[in-house]
Length: 239
Ligand SMILES: Nc1ncnc2c1ncn2[C@@H]1O[C@H](COP(=O)(O)OP(=O)(O)OP(=O)(O)O)[C@@H](O)[C@H]1O
Ligand SMILES: [Mg+2]
Image: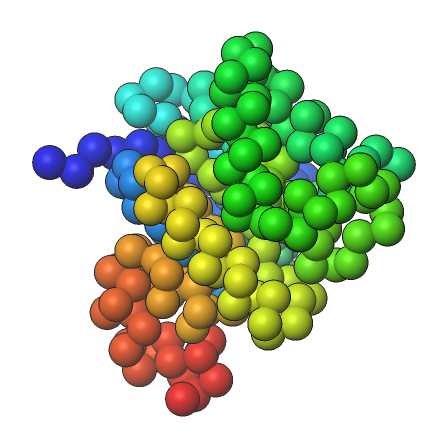
């Protein structure tokens, strides 16, 4: 039996008069990779931020392993095992790579788990290991993105929320990032990934949702979506 990690029902997000998310339902099974796709302004980031408690839900319910987390305090949500790697990265430039990773482990007291976190991050991203004492502002864009993902992993989350991890990266780096997301899944972490890069994302995802101006207009198994003529037309470059 598949276990539901995250369940979103009837979620609405409003910014003043703007309804950015208009009542969406999303279900994420434990151990799966779920893709949230859609054009600019579709409501993808708003959805992720609402799961993390950074933005309030106007209506609807978000449950994490059956527990209602709707509009719960961000820190409490993090402690339950939800970590987000934000769009735009938000790394502390004047801290070293290692110090930034330590910040990601703020919910963890057990030194062994923190140690395992460092090992996991440096195994996924050897480049970060080589640069652990380097100030974060000196990192390249790709390295910063790696650091943002690694920092989110440091809390040893049950579920990792990734907001556009491939944004602005060179194709080879993008390929590395997607390979690592596969490994993260293989090690048992559930992943929700927001991406514009629909084709590559669907290749590593189990399930996908396509958001269009705040509504889900398509959803299904990633292997089916990837062949859907409508999706191919709209997001996969008509290939
Ligand atoms: N803090 C805010 N105040 C007002 N409007 C906002 C705010 N944040 C987002 N919006 C609006 O809500 C809508 C959805 O934005 P959101 O960032 O969730 O989209 P997105 O799918 O992540 O887009 P992108 O692919 O460009 O990152 C947009 O129209 C945006 O302008
Ligand atoms: Mg966004």
